Length: 70
Image (cartoon, rainbow, N blue to C red):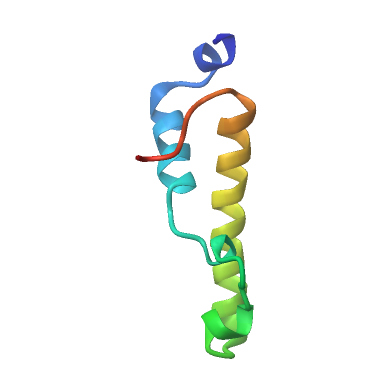
């Protein structure tokens, strides 16, 4: 695909690594308070990490690049 030639292999690898992390938001019954133990700082940073993973997933999916590790 053309878009893959615009993104270098190192950047694609970085996106794939980020996309494949386990996210709190992947849980169908996700409750931020449960995952953060009620700690607002943990909830904030957990949300930031999930946001990065979801963005990486969106970018790779939009570019037609498989990101899921079997």
